[in-house]
Amino acid sequence: MTFDRPMATEKAWSWMILRDLGAYPGDRTLGEPRWENDNKTCVLPVKLSPGTLYAVGVNSPRNWGFKGTDGKAAVPYGWVFKTRAAEK
Image 1: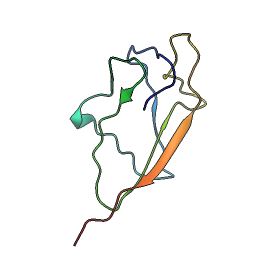
Image 2: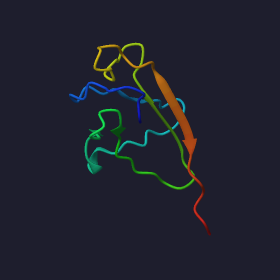
Image 3: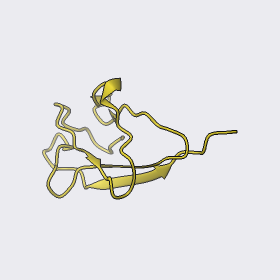
């Protein structure tokens, strides 16, 4: 996720699990989320399977971990995507 402004990067992210919409792609066995040196890009390690519907979001009405360096929280936002089926 790349934001349009510098973000507070002290491990205060809020990746959201949107189970009603799809599977959560994040995989802690691959490591924790991390910030790139630009202080705008947060990388969520993921593990994807073919032909699977996924959903993930940032922030929510109760979780505001993604904040700019000015203290303003990022607007909650979500993505839903499906991976291509495995080739036969």
